[in-house]
Length: 67
Length: 318
Image (cartoon, rainbow over all chains, first blue to last red; front, side, top):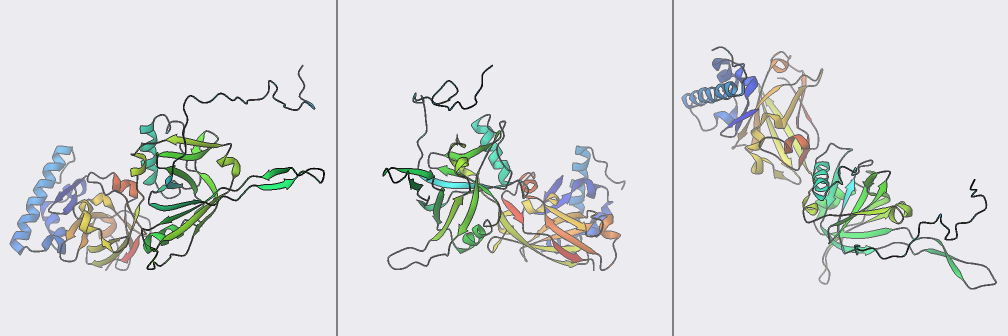
């Protein structure tokens, strides 16, 4: 199951197994996700994306990682 | 007990002939196009249970894996019947009666005007071993029965001719022709399915060429559809679905987790790679990236219908 945010797609089940810190560190170097964002904007974008992934994971019954 | 020894069938009770006109029949129309089928592909009785079932089966077969696929083509601009005349022989020197000894071999010449790239696509069918269904402008699909399966006519040749330049008096055109292999398939075993306009809306698959370059854990993937179109121009959002890609370690085939994102400055998809197969690999380990099968792409939550990768691209872990 994919969650697409601003033309960036995430495997909900796999990403929900990461902690927020792991998720942000994993994606912060992706040029497509970084494009047009300052470091602060990028961090906030990724944190908001992670929150949305966890919400969707919970809704679908997948167990998110402990924060 | 009955005995058929030395008893010719001269209209006796064992014959099957009758002359009553059918209550309803079809008259062949002008050819509209054809559908090539991979060898062995056909339509079972359940595929033929209704017109809706047939159209669904046909559409499914156009997106099936190679070897089980249907290839529709409805862009004909010219048709000629090139069937050889029947062979005749004189009955003997005491009569001037000619008798047909061999029926003509069905053969048909076509043209299209789609272009050079399409013509080169057609050339790949010369040795593909396909069978052919013919479709006329009344949406009737003509084929043959093989056992209980409706399938295409066997081909002894699928020949793609030289493309022709235009001149002040004639347009350019692209000729090709087919010669059927079996008179029996076409004549005695010929069958038809009365389709509708939906039948001829099915399309073939477009090739997509991938290119890939890796930086740390981000794989930049370019997708160029036939011929030269950047697929992200059409499917930037749909290509952000992880299920559109297959990234695997070459040795062992372990799958890599993919987070695809559209890079508007490069026009490519940037895939963040993660998961044990990636993080546990060593510098220099080989991986491959490919698009998922055409049927999988067409079945995604946001579908990408009618495209297929020409093949996986290999890259090495930095």
